[in-house]
Length: 283
Image 1 (cartoon, rainbow, N blue to C red):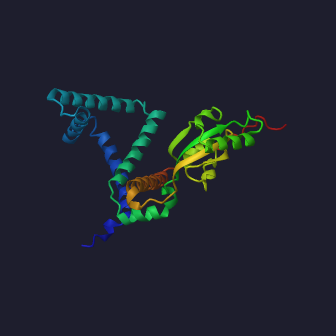
Image 2: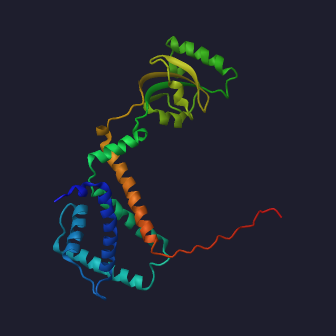
Image 3: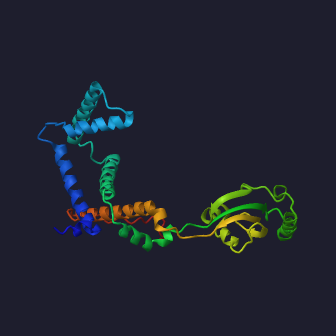
């Protein structure tokens, strides 16, 4: 028997889409039951017991299990009566929870599929920029407030001379909210702290020497880089788990969208034309 088609991800996710509708129909039928009958199956009892055991790290005692069953029956009775009364209608919270359940169902089904390694490697190759490890720097900085210094460029030259001569950096410069030393900070975080493109000024700076001034959103800085790791592309094996997670998220979105479009086609949708507001319009 040729089972090669089973390994085809596209076929796998077609099957998942079918399962979504089948499972949805199954649960709908199960919720309705036979008339007013409520059936607590052995699988349901085991499910209640498993939830208790995960929370308490032990199986429930017989009286505790009976309490769980009684509470489930109570919940089912009140839920059915609430539905009969229409209490589930026009309730934003319930609508959102039902939507979340549909999305969680798709997520669980996607995670149940183990994609071939080649599929993940191809996904990684198509998204290399996303997985590039940013540059990292360890550095110290001395801040000069350009708003308080009339000759900040000349002051920077004088302070740089003192730093090069070995004077204590903490005794120089102006106070600000930025810390003095930063350990293995990515270029993205540096730019968030100092302002856009500040880290680009690090390019070409000599390691272990005071340099500057470098201009930030706050003023001028004298910087000494003690360690620098350039941006690099990690191997697939190093971040396989991240790639798998991202691939699953993308597949989940695709399945949900396909499911939604299929379900939407079952409805005739009429949307009223929004009323045009003339407030503030010219006479």
